[in-house]
Structure formats: C-alpha cells, structure tokens
Length: 175
Image (cartoon, rainbow, N blue to C red):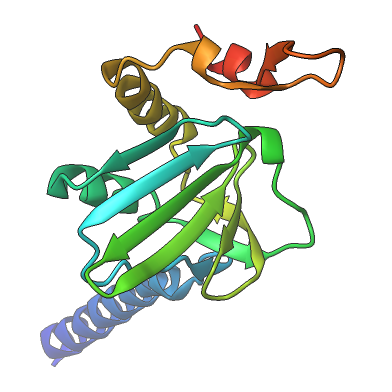
C-alpha cells in the first residue's frame, strides 16, 4: 500500500511539474510584438523606380531580382502610426509599377519613417530595420553604371544668366 501511494504521489508531482513547465514555456508565445506588421503589396509589379531626396537621377529597373530586392527591404518590419514627417533630404521614393500602372508607392528615410501611397499615413519602424544603406548602394550602383555625371544635375542658380549649380543632395551622395 505504501509503495502504491508513493507512485501516485510521484506521478502527481511529475505531472504538476510538467504542466507548470509547459504553462511557463507557452506563456512567452502569446506575447504581442509592438506595432503592426508593415505590408507592402507590389502585386504584379515588373519594374521599380527609385528617387532619392531632391537628386535629379532616378534608378529604374525591369529586372525581377531588383524589383524583389526593393520589396524585400520592407519585409519583417513592424510599425506604428506617427506624426513624424519624412526627412526629404534622405528620402527614398520607390514606385513599383506593373502592366496596369502603379502598384505601390512607399517613401522611407534613414530614421525609419515610412509613408505609403495606399494608406496616405506616416509610420515609424518599431521592430526590424529598414536597410537604408543597402538601398542607397543599389541606387548609387545604378547611377554610376548608367554613366551619370554630377554636372548633369544642374538647376538655375538665379544669380546671373547662364550660371548653374549642382543639386545639393548629389554632393552628399558622391563618395
């Protein structure tokens, strides 16, 4: 009889410990991450155009890998609504276009503020990271591969006839 009671007590104790351990492990699974998942639906986009700041050069590609890479820059981000505006000097405006026209527009800056054409709202990244430097590298590689010259980016200075000056943001881009 004593052996039987010990087995029951052992079984109950083991079961209680297993249940408690399971509850502790599962309690962490229900934690909600901050913000909401950022969704960028590019649909059937077959090209991407990227503008940076007020620079006159635009990156354009119909390569599927470039379209996918640009969309992937926004995967895994969690965002919250914000009143913070985008820094226009460090802003990327990215247009995804398909056979039927523009599919998606997203703007992003180096501080993690996003804006989409679909929602017409500003978001701040709270989890994950926007790869601003990688996007800048793609943009610059395209610019230099196309033979772009900073002198091509001139605007009237207003200080006399025929004088021009380069767009301010180009100098920041030029390494």
